[in-house]
Image (cartoon, rainbow, N blue to C red; front, side, top):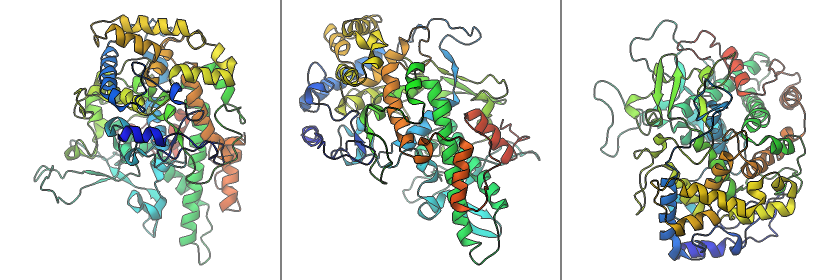
Length: 581
């Protein structure tokens, strides 16, 4: 009955339009549907039945998604690519740092208390609490006043909190004299009130609490290191601004601190937006679709002309959060060269967090990321991400991190992705393609997989049938999945089918959905939408707080490699031990 009630509640009142032109849904706070709410006939179906309208089909849906996830366990036989030194499954166009930048962006767009797959249906626990997009709330939280636990004192003689808190790394042996200690996120112990103490008595206290704005930023070692990277950059920007402040006047100490924080935060946000627009999206989006959206005034399909939005009005499409943007999971490698000292497999990497391994926190020197291993910097050869297709690394089936939660007893992240999509009442792939074709036929026409339904069904059927040992899909299951594939699976399948670029970037449908949301969120920020250079945006930010341009020494940072290099310089980590760059 709960699912039925959600179905009845999810019909949109189309008169509810926010300032950015988004249709707002009264059903799941913080969420909506791409292109408006689909009619019941346009929603994803299992065996021809809408799970939202017919809760009795949900057990069959679970079994179907279980079988599909098993089929996706079969490794993909990728064709060879131009870079003969790379593994056939690697993507030389995509250093693996972008895998985790995508995860960071996802945290900056969506924050729900309970995954939809585990909750079993839409409800209060699945609401999206992130109501302003891409504003680095995942890093800054509610600021020094609202989230004081993540901020440190600015300086020995200044008790204002405008710098993000960092923590000392742990050395397995003795710390060398040249060591750079503050390289981890901040972590602390909590008083034992449950009778469970995970410390090693007399040896090490369990640091169970990650002092970060979003606990998901400590999901694993690479994620916490990326969070520390952004924190180091923010703190360096604070120092740049502080050096140019006028210390005279009665308000110098207190008022200046807040100006300093706001200016540094806005500067980091501008840099972040520039990287999303010019680096991340350029790499993951189909080139033809990227050209449609990269400019300052894209012709969006999903909304009217953006003119900004009120705080709390923004909502994210299910088709993005539970559909297209799940593609990043396919990019995760089975192991990572973290630095010159260590190679760690994915299972070990996923378990390195305060929640899963508190007794071995903070991270030791073998987990300090050397960023030239994750981004191309000065000719470095980084870890490459996996090619994008319907397959996930074995480590994402870790039964300790992603345990079974229903009668299928299926462990792992893949099943959760597929089931969550099936329960969200999303557009079917066919209906979504038709709707986009009605609005922008030229975008659909570029892909035979999208434009020719019979071809699409045939290609899906051929792939689903190709590995009978995986999933043991019945003929009936193959037909229902061929004719109505769940969106996150189809986005991966489409990426795999890209001619001459198999798995190197998203296909047109995935690219359209991702571009509409990411570029749409950027367009709602006047500074990101105005088409000005980063230098012009930074100068504008500085003028809001100071008479002179206190940000003029910041270079034109338009890639993650440049962000790392600038952070290395302002944090004085050129000679860091372990190596930072």
